[in-house]
Length: 111
Image (tube, rainbow, N blue to C red; front, side):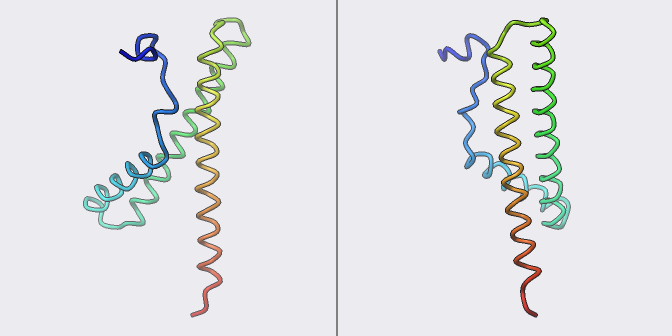
């Protein structure tokens, strides 16, 4: 039995970028069949990912407040929530930068 599962601790390192991307692509294929356009599916997936990132950031802020007010002394949960928020924000910023680079490249194309 996994030590982390016994203690109720969530492991961050269980999620790889490849699994996240694979899940996103599978979601895109599923939504493409139902909604009709790939752009709509990409946009909805991006919005969902931004909402998830905001959720992680909010959870981290809540944990910081609890710790600073003395409501909890568990630094482990605080550090996990801060790391989740940091990783999600870095991923979101990297995706945004890639999208902006792609947009700039498309705008510079000659017709």
